[in-house]
Image 1 (tube, rainbow, N blue to C red):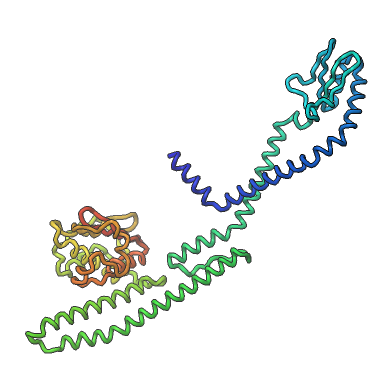
Image 2 (image 1 turned 180 degrees about the vertical axis):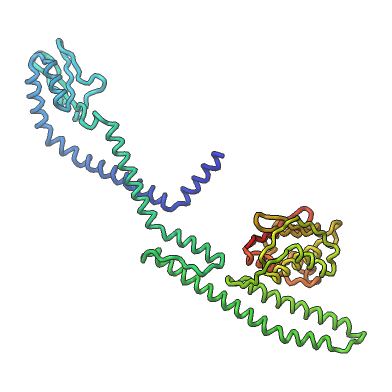
Length: 427
């Protein structure tokens, strides 16, 4: 559990551009401060020592004279209390250190130029004592930490505001990927990110225009093809029936029927794929509609029905739901034809809505193909489906019908067989 949480945080830190920018800013500030302080200390240390040495030496001589001979410890204590210095006295009669817990800090290579020897043989050494900011180190440390945190928070807020258009661009890309082009990316600023958002909006409008043009062309072609197909089918049916040409006539009628079904499914799929798909909703008893579709099917007697009691009445598009049920029924009968157990249609409650499940007990589908079953014109077995009249749009149409009603469409291997689940919510 902890490892998973740590992995998520690691991924978030690596993925977040804001956090990485703040870290770069903080490290850059620390590096610049270190370089500046080191350079200034290096530049001033040598010159400052040379200029301050005679002044400090003269001052030390005056302090030694003030301490007397032999050095007076009381006067030394008074000096240490008044000035931020440390004093060490070593000699035959007086041995005293103002800071016995640490060594005195000198300014020379060995600190020897801050030492004086009195006439009676005592050695007096001077160094840096307790500085004012060292007397309350915790308070200064907490204030410094608080200021650093405040600066980091201000920097993060500024970077977050600066990169806010990236959130809008990500959300817009997700909408455009789903085909929702009606809400463009908001333009918050007139900088490089604003220009990027504007270009993506332009690209989305161009893509929407191309999709609309493709959809309009497909609808126009489908409508135009219906009339010659109808005439060709009528002419084929009016051909004189002869024993020699009956087989060819039946094959021609079957091909024309497949072309008609393909055009009908194409028209319906384009209408449903439109973001403004019009549904003619009305109260529908889903159980009664399924029983009617099963009774009308030539092989409907092979279907097992399993309906829960007290199912709610849904507001649905009757013709589209009938299309969904018929396609799922055909698919289950086709793939479960050789199974020992007949296909089953189940209805059960799903919250305020209804779940429709159609399952066959055939061989199922390879797991790698499950996600592609609802793609248009996708066939797991092209030869078999063509022989049975399939055009590869049945599952695709079923998914579009479910999504147009605000529902979900899922396909899974039921072992054995394939189970298709459609959840239709209450309107």
